Length: 167
Image (cartoon, rainbow, N blue to C red; front, top):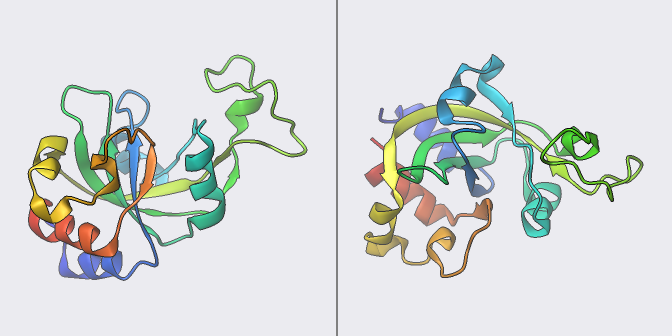
């Protein structure tokens, strides 16, 4: 699906731009689109740098490339936006959760989450297509050793992906 001109303009006028990875078995673009208000909690972040992006840099209205990882065909599968301020990830306090952290105190939680609203789905833009596009040579997700689940994206790279690859 291509983006409407209004949605494209809205996304490109965001303050900041992000690529956020999710395993489709945890939360897919389809899950997000079918959730109430097309909004899901981006739970389970257990990397300090990614947590710091949530805590210090993300704001409501920031634009997001929704990326499926750890699957048969990893790649960008949609566009979204940040839909809340950061808040404690309650799973860190649940001993039954895979995301439980016994060292995280309730009075000063270590891990945060943020709500993400899905706006549009596209056919998978595979990582190979991103790698083969010279205009995206500096895209952080393509840098050697980068495994972060949340990465900032430059405005020009975000615009290029939406205008040329997002169909």
